[in-house]
Amino acid sequence: MTAITNIYRSALLATCLVGGTACAEDKLAKEPLATPTQSTTAPAAPLSTAEPVSSALIDMELVKLVDMPLPSFSVDAAWPNMPEDQIIGQVPGLAIDKDDNVWIVQRPNSLTKFDNGAAQDPPIALCCKPAPHVIQFSPAGDILQAWGGEAHAPTIDGVNQWPASVHGIFVDDEMIVWIGGNGDGDHIVSGFSTSGEYKQSVGKRGATGGNADPSTLGNPADMTHDPETGHLLIADGYINKRVIGFNSKTDDFLTYWGAYGASPDGEAREGSFDQSMASSNNDGGANPDAEAFGDIVHCIEQSPTGDILVCDRRNNRIQLFRPDETGGYSFVKNIIIAPETGGTRTASDLAFSPDGAFMYVADMMNSVVWILDADSHEILGRFGRIGRYPGQFTWLHSVEVDSQGNLYTSEVGTGRRVQKFVFAGLQ
Image 1 (cartoon, helix red, strand yellow):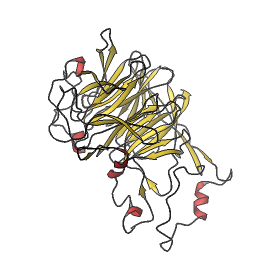
Image 2 (image 1 turned 180 degrees about the vertical axis):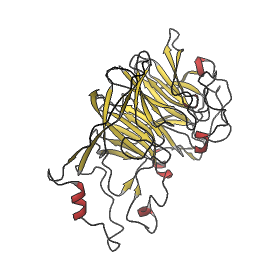
Image 3 (image 1 turned 120 degrees about the horizontal axis):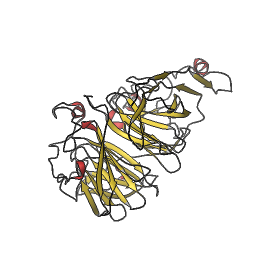
Image 4 (image 1 turned 135 degrees about the vertical axis):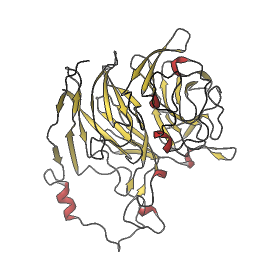
């Protein structure tokens, strides 16, 4: 890897679309805020809002570590179009469906009364109300579907199967929306229709049996679906430390494995996961050479060539597995991401460019998206930094790419947002 660094930053490109000329700031100046004498019981804004009043593309800073053209992006500061009276919380799941629509799963329960003033009884502020758990956006940012909560899940043995803390979302080619959870007792992955109709589940809330148990889960973090084999592969990930696979049609167990493809018979996390554990150093720090997965197996992704990549976030690495002649998956290599990083660590999620040339890795602690060569896995560059403004990240969690090369990210912790990065060609 050469040490050539090329930093570019373009000027702000802002296009104001109110009447074709007037800027959003002018419009707001002419429309004063609602006063306390106005009704606080007016119906909520519709799910899909009107055309945005402004669109701002801000070119990102790209740090190049090699002397070659790399993907560049502009962040769309006006995306998405949320109803004026709604707010989202932590966004631990992000997916792109086959029509390039963007799905998020978010945590209304991560918001406080100071965020949800309008939802209090009586209301204590002009805004806001929590948005639903699951939202489907069009590429333009308009809401197409929004649903979620206990009404969408069955009750089994007196326990409702909707997760206490949602985590991870995947939309397969048949438009089944798969959702997991990492809250207390959330040992389940469930499939829903795009409108929120419950279809099926793997695992059950409140039931877990450790890494060697093929019939239960342990706080699954993420999932992917192979349309050719029908395998639903799960990063089983916050209590257990393994990958496990099921037949997505019959829910029958197929396979499981630990780090390096070994038998997943190590110790599971004791007790429930809480967010303070995400940055704990009780594990002694990241160890990219560790023989076992760390205590958060955080993502699972299928590459365009059929490889399976698993984010071992706490060990600052991604492990690559390849389908073999036995019908299972064999370990190929470690991909190390910023190995000396502490705190919440690095390898949180990954995605591929539509041409399969580049791999993008979301680094939670450093708040950057790394750009890698998808074949050699050499790190080529990065963009982003810690911050709260467009194009910056706080608790960067997920990354996805659509068929046009546009990139999307989500944030948890105090970040609590989703961002769109418009592909601007190779730079």
